[in-house]
Every structure is written in C-alpha cells, then in structure tokens.
Image (cartoon, rainbow, N blue to C red):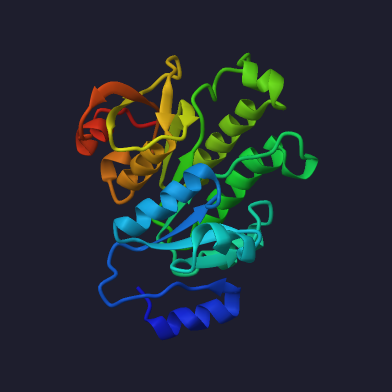
Length: 249
C-alpha cells in the first residue's frame, strides 16, 4: 500500500480525496460504487469496521460527505464515464458495486447504469491491479417475464446484461443476487445461498453488505454467481462452507 504522502499525490492528480491512512492498514482499499444508497452505506460501515480502507465513488462529494462522513476517501465521477472510473482506481485493490438505476430518469436508466455502468466498472478494472470486483445484482435477473421488467423499464434484463459484461471482462468477480431488500439489522438470521435463479425471499441490506465483504480475498467466492436470502434461523454464517458449496460459472 502507498504511504500517506504518495496517497496525497494521487489525490491531487486524480481529484480523489484520500481518507486517513495508518501504517497498520493491510487489508487493502475498496472502491465502493453506489456508496450513498442503503446497501452502499452498510458496505462503507462494514468495510471500515473490518479494517479496509474505503474510497466512495460519488457524483457529488459534498452531498456524500453529509451521508458518509469524513473518515473515508472520496473519488468524484460517474459510472457512465469510464475515464472517471479509471482515475478513481489508483491504489485500489477491490471494487464493490451497489449501484442502482432510476427507471424514471432517462439519463440514469437501467440500460445506462445497470448495464453500461457495470460494464464500465469491469472494463476499467482490467489491467489496473484490481484483484476482485463484487457486484450486487438481483435475484430474478435471468427471468425476462419478471414483473419488475414490465414495471421498471426491463431493469432485471439490464442487470443480467451487466452481470454478463462483468463475467466476460476477465476481471476476477463475485456476483451476489439478493432477494427483496429490507432495512433491518444484519448478522442476526443466517443467510441461504442458492443457484439457478429459481428461489425467492427477502434479505437485510446489512446482510448483503456482510456477504460482499466476506467474498473479498476469499478464493472460494471467485467467479461465482448466486442468489441469497435470509433464513428463519438465528446464528452466525459459516462463510467458507457457504462459498465453497457454490459451483463456479
């Protein structure tokens, strides 16, 4: 990892605001796209709690600081602009994307964000030293007749195309397809991993964040796609067993 002085130089060259670094930082730096959303906020907090350096990729740093605070780094850019992503990836080890489109906004629609934005993130990651990209997608992504496609501008179709772009990019990846997202504390109910996109359920945003973070630096999570939901059982999750039981893509 770079020294604080080197990090400051990078910040001046790229427009990134670098959070405080310490000599003991060993887990690496994570660029979080979609950091100000509900899942993104849980990711930022969870990553910090587990010793990662966080860089939030945001369009408006001033607004983001109100939500996320001053203890993390920031990179200003837009997932629809690949050059801004490349600038944000200096000294970044991992990417976690929790971006989401706004179907009612033509400039922020599913094709531009859930597909185009993910493709840009994946393409920018290749050859830059990024070791893994974790994508928060959605269960139902393979179901073209899903009601969400009819209601929200084919959002799941575009999410699936974003997944496919990531899988084809050559970047090491993990694709997490959560069920219906709910705002309740995580780490209480265990989670279920499934494959085949035939099951449904709900899951806490905080648990989705915990899953994404557990996937980092975990070789048994690489190049795998899976759905996930909360179970009715309280307890701790056995991450090695959960990831290890999944089939690679």
